[in-house]
Image (tube, rainbow, N blue to C red):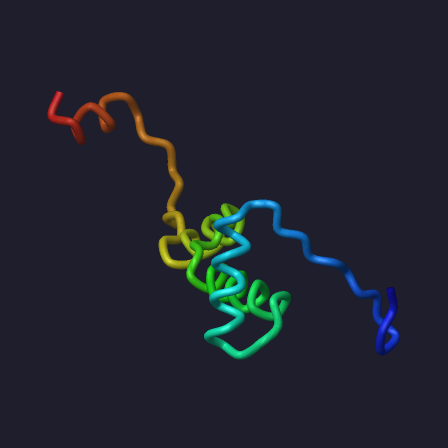
Length: 85
């Protein structure tokens, strides 16, 4: 089906509890069933944690904690002295 130039998709809820909840939200909000489901999904997505973007996390980390400029290697003796060995 096409209305307003955009395809229209059907919504079919096969779980009785899901159907009941969607209809209750539809009634309370005064909107159609599809709009009620869309509202509920948008609300849930707004509260759901975002997956971790490891690339962004690393960029932020290295911006906040850049590696030291002096990367001169240390001898075994110097390293051991740092650990009181």
